[in-house]
Image (cartoon, rainbow, N blue to C red; front, side):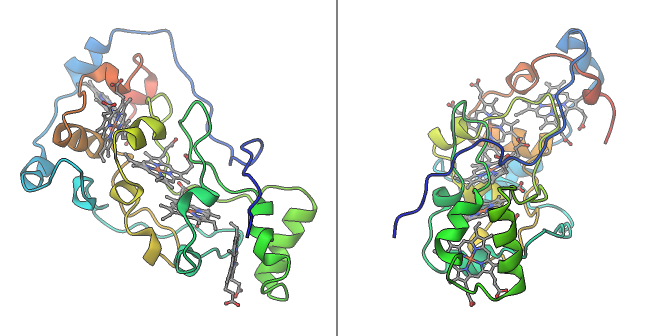
Length: 211
Ligand code: HEC
Ligand code: HEC
Ligand code: HEC
Ligand code: HEC
Ligand code: HEC
């Protein structure tokens, strides 16, 4: 079966706009921020360089799954043998993995399970050319430098940062991958850079406003 290409335009759920104030030296950040211990560094000793799901901390307390507009299940769909990249592409400049266009879903659902209410809702989004307003699960703080492509090119796997997606009936935030310590501990493990400017372009108010 042929699937339509996933164009990137318009399908992204709206993100918070980036705001920067005029740059103040990152050294200020250095002065007010001290790294604590590195819990993963210990667990890390047994990790190999290829990486494993243990390289990124689990979220300390599992976060409840957000309520999605359509009850999409990765477990159901991945059991069909679908590849992540069929729905999640990495267009230039490489930051995003994107969400699938409804046409990708309708390749199957124009005929499959079409009497189910959830699929009728999907079909309504499709025919009105409205992207499904998926609720985001993972987001990094605005202003932090991030790129999926850099990580995929370095051999990092989806499961390292997002857990065992193939078993998820509902997508939830199971990995502390958007926290600074989650990023840093993995960087230490894989000998990636850890200087402040690796991830922070400049000082920004978000850096001091504790979340
Ligand atoms: C048939 C399409 C499809 C396939 C295949 C698929 N996904 Fe998804 N994925 C979705 C949809 C739709 C969403 C949004 C709804 C949700 O969060 O469950 C999503 C959401 C996600 C999210 C949450 C992103 C966020 O921050 O909101 C992650 C992570 C993810 N997928 C990873 C994967 C991985 C890893 C694979 C392969 C193992 C995969 N997906 C395969 C359709 C797909
Ligand atoms: C390769 C074919 C295929 C694609 C592509 C696909 N699905 Fe499915 N989907 C299925 C199958 C098979 C089932 C299970 C149907 C059943 O149990 O009756 C299913 C079930 C579902 C269900 C549950 C229906 C119900 O209420 O029982 C939802 C919701 C759904 N899909 C949404 C989506 C969305 C959203 C996309 C696009 C991101 C998508 N599907 C892409 C094949 C597909
Ligand atoms: C090194 C860690 C890491 C790896 C590897 C990784 N992700 Fe992500 N993913 C993240 C982070 C961090 C975010 C939040 C990014 C943001 O806020 O812009 C994210 C967000 C997402 C999103 C939401 C849309 C977006 O791009 O922001 C999807 C979908 C997703 N990832 C799917 C995948 C899939 C599929 C793979 C494997 C092909 C993958 N990710 C590999 C860390 C990772
Ligand atoms: C699973 C391990 C892992 C996690 C988690 C991870 N990284 Fe990385 N990151 C790497 C590796 C490995 C590289 C080195 C890539 C290279 O050298 O090409 C890298 C490179 C980078 C780069 C490019 C640095 C350069 O050389 O210019 C940035 C920026 C970055 N990561 C930001 C982040 C941020 C922000 C997070 C958390 C939101 C994060 N990373 C989480 C493994 C990880
Ligand atoms: C590997 C990427 C990475 C590196 C290197 C890094 N940070 Fe961060 N930093 C992040 C991420 C991601 C966040 C957002 C955390 C969140 O959303 O909770 C963050 C947030 C912060 C915050 C805001 C406090 C908070 O937790 O929300 C401060 C302050 C900060 N970083 C300072 C620094 C300083 C100083 C350095 C250098 C010593 C540094 N960072 C190095 C990724 C990094």
